[in-house]
Image 1 (cartoon, rainbow, N blue to C red):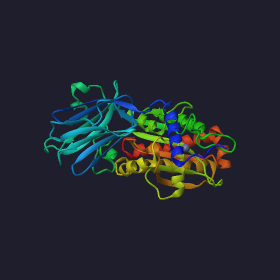
Image 2: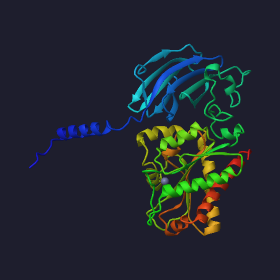
Image 3: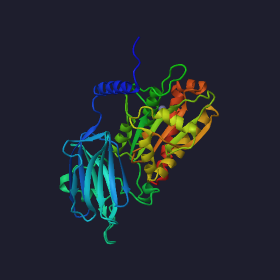
Image 4: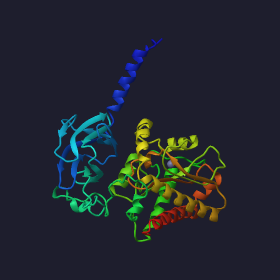
Length: 410
Ligand SMILES: [Zn+2]
């Protein structure tokens, strides 16, 4: 008879198994390799060289006033850990770099109280680096940094353009709502994100139709429709059946400095008669059904729900929130209306906030649309046909176009 293990022995055994199995995985973290900073005439710039593009998140803290930047799935190079620097800047007192936890690097800047007007954070390539610019409050004679001005003030040591297009994302506004509209920015770059892929099939219909395959096909069709307009650059997060972590999807959209991010999915419900369209923007939801769906869509995330609460609290306060909801409403109503007109009645499941990882960290209006149900026999049968898929793509297209027109730039 094998001897029964004590709780202590069991824990030790599990720990050994964990260490053995985890040591065989390649380290997914990107190395933060160097830090440099400089006070330019109009702004303070800090540059972190980092091995790969990673999601980041920034927020401000009070007492003392400081700004921090968390870089996820990252680790500090030996020698950078715990370093702190005195800074000769009118708006920054000092800064510190630390490995906040095994997967997160935190940069903290202690600010000179009341001096910061705005900050901009973006990636540059070759080598990959994350740039943080802090603009101080200035006299009325000198306007705040705007989309058009920022690149001109870029000094010689950072001549490479941000990975984005022109105009650059504007400095964050405390007023929040409709920054896109206030600045009259149009839509040029769109990132389409076919849900799931590779080892993650998403939901699977009774006859074996996989969400990942349908979503990819829908994204391809939508891309063609958008490109025929001749004024958009359209990217897809994946163009084949490959595994792609959720965090990398928005990271890619940020890297491309996209103006819109649309994640395309198919729904599945235990209620087999449920049909129709359900569209999400990022928020927390009191609805258990929404959270259940989100848990399914989040299944491939490497982060945990505790991280998420912290992040979403911040994200829902940002300026993309209203725009994302607006985009979601337009996409939702056009898609639903188009499917109803051509294929008969279906459920309007509404536009909702939901805690979806793939929407977190995007720096542009972002929505996730559950275009139809693989769990419903009628919609599943329709999803096997070209004509229905084309109709879904067209409905999404019309919603996007209405949003673009509503910005006054369409
Ligand atoms: Zn999905």
